[in-house]
Length: 112
Image (cartoon, rainbow, N blue to C red; front, side, top):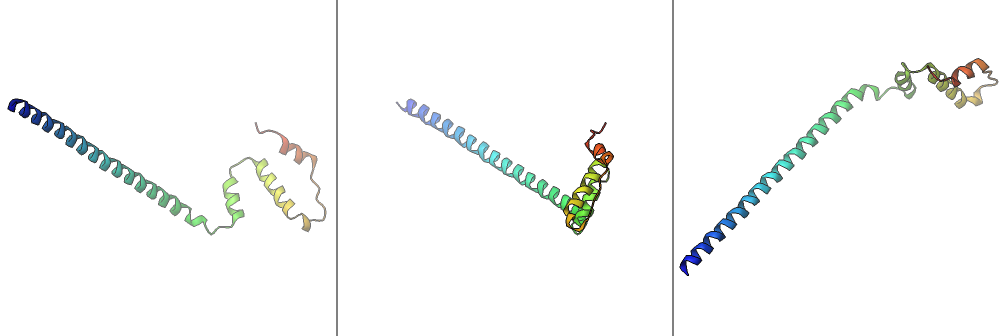
């Protein structure tokens, strides 16, 4: 009977040791996940700061200037289309406007 109790006690100790080991593994994993999340946040903050710092000089520029900077290397048809849009926005100030069929044809052609 004492031998059975000793075996039972030893088995109980082994089970408790396994549980403690699993708890330790999970605690370590929790710390790892927390550290990884903190690193991801720090990287995102650094990228955000870099982007903000690089765009800061553009903050005070006029929207039209920014638009021209954005399209400076684009298809000329887009620039003409934007100019026509600008004309349309100021249509009340324009008496007559003649647009040649050639211009419209050029705008309608697909770029090659």
